[in-house]
Amino acid sequence: MVNKILGVGFFAFAVLNVSSQEAVGPMKPSAYEAGINHWHMQDMQKDGTPGVSAEKAYTELLVGRKSTPVVVAIIDSGTETFHPDLKDNVWINPKEIAGNNVDDDKNGYVDDIHGWSFIGGEKGDVSFDNLEFTRIYRDLKNRFGTVTDEKQVSDSDRSDYARFIKMKGEYDKRWKTAQEEAQNFEMVVMFYERSDEALRQVLGKEDYTVEDVQAMEPKDDFMKAVKEFMTMAMQEDLKNQFAEGKEHYDSMLQYQLNLDFDPRYLVGDNYSDSHQKNYGNNHVDGPESDHGTHVGGIVGATRNGFGMDGIADNVRLMIVRCVPNGDERDKDVANSIRYAVDNGARVINMSFGKSYSPQKDVVDEAVKYAESKGVLLVHAAGNDGKNVDVAANFPKDKYNSGEYCSTWLEIGASGRELSALSADFSNYGKKSVDVFAPGVDIYSTVTGDQYKDNSGTSMASPVTAGVAATILSYYPQLTAKDVKAIIMKSAVNYGKQKVVMPGNPSKKVKFKKLSVTGGVVNLYEALKLAETWKSGSQG
Image (tube, rainbow, N blue to C red; front, side, top):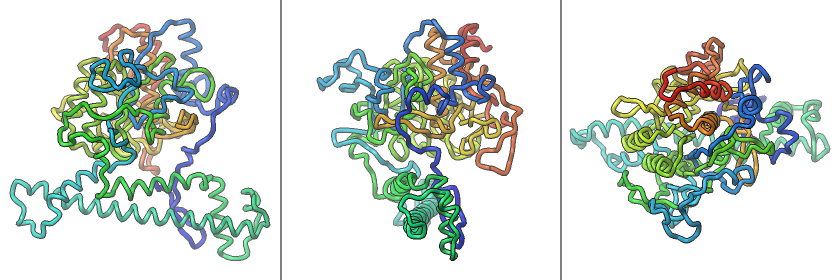
C-alpha cells in the first residue's frame, strides 16, 4: 500500500497512494452520458480507448434481441443488495420464504433469500481476519514456540520446524515493517496538520488554494518544506485519503498480523472439519461490503444510464460472502463455490486471492465440482506486480493432481491508455493469466448508495464475468468451455504493444509476454464470434 517516498526539504515522508479510490457521490445521468467514468465500456476504434466495447455491442449487435437471465455468483465481502443501482438485479431464491426462519428449499441454509455468508453466525459477522500467513505461523508457533534446541524436534516434525523458523523470520520482518510504515504515516498526518496551521497563519485565510500555496515566498527552511509538501498534498488530495490510510495500518497491526486475534468464534463452526457445509448466516450485505458492492455493480448494475451501468443487461447477482478484511479461508471458499453451483449460478466471480492455501485440496474438490456442472469460474490474478507462473497465488486453476480446470479464466488488469495497457500493479503470467481486462479507475457502486473509482484485478475480473454473462444471456446454449474459448479467441490482440512490466517500471516488454492471449477482453468481438460458434468447437 505504501509505495511512494517523497523527500520534502529535510523531511522524508511515506505517502499512501490511494488516489484511484477517491469516493464521490452519485453521478447525474448527463455526466454518465458524456462519457465520464465508463471508459471500460468504450471501444478502441470508436473512442480511442481499449475498453471492452460494451456500448458498441449494445447499440450495434443487441438492439431488439431477446435474452435470458443469467445468475452470476459474486463470491466476495458481501454486496449491498438494496443499492438503488443493484436491487432490481439481485438474485432471489425462488424456493425460499423470507423471514420465516425455515429452510424451505431444504438446501441446508435458512432464509438464504439473496445468497449466503460463510463468515457469520449467531454471535455476529466477521469484519476482519488474519492473513493466511499469520494463521499458519500461529499454528506452527503453538507447536514449536517453546523449542530451544532443534534436537528436541522429532524426525517426523523436522520439516515443519524448519518451516516455522523460516516463517518466524518473515513474520518478524512483516511486523516491523508494518509498525515503521504506520509510524511514518502518522508523521505525514501530523506534518500535514502542522503545515495547514502554518499556512493559515502566513496566508491570513482559513480556506486557501493550491495557487495560494505555490505563490507563497517561504522565509525559512520549514516553510519551504511546507510549501513543497502542501502543494503535493493538495494536488493528490491527501487529506481525504488519511482515513483510508489509518484503516489500512490499523487492520494490518490489529487484525491481519495480530497473532492474538482470531474472530472465528463468531461463525461457530467446527473449523477443524474442512468438509463441514451447513454453517454461516444470511447477512450477505456485510459488514465490510464496499469491495463486493463495487464488484457486483461492474457485473450487473442496472443499465439505466444513472450512476453507472453494469456490463450485463439481464443478470441476477447471487451474493456469497466469504471474504473478510484479511485473507479468506479455504473452507469458506470451497463452500461458497459449492453453494453457488448448487443454487444455479452459471458464472462465478472471485475477486480475491492469497499466497498460501493450506487446505487447497478442499478448494480443488469444489472447483472440480463446478467444472463438472459446467460453471465458469472467473478469478482475479492479483495485485502484487508478480509473475504468477512462478509466484504463489490462490485459488488457482491447477489442481494438486497437476491437471487444470477447463472452465476457469484468470484475469489481469489493463489500463485506459495503450502506453499504460498493463496496470503497474497487475500480476501477470504467460502461462497462468489467460487474458487482461480493464481494471484501472473503474467506476462502480459502493455502500451507502454511493459510487467511486477503484483499481485492481478485482475490477478486471467482474468486467470479464459481465462479458461472460452477456454471452450466455444471448446464447444460452453455449457451455462454460465455449464461453471461455470465445472470450480468449475474441480478445483484442495488443501483443506487439510495448508496455511497462508490472512491478518493474524500468523495464518494457511486449504485451503478449504477460498472458496466454496477449489480448484484452472485448464483448463486441465475443458476441460476433458467439453468433457463429458451434458448441464444443475449438474454433
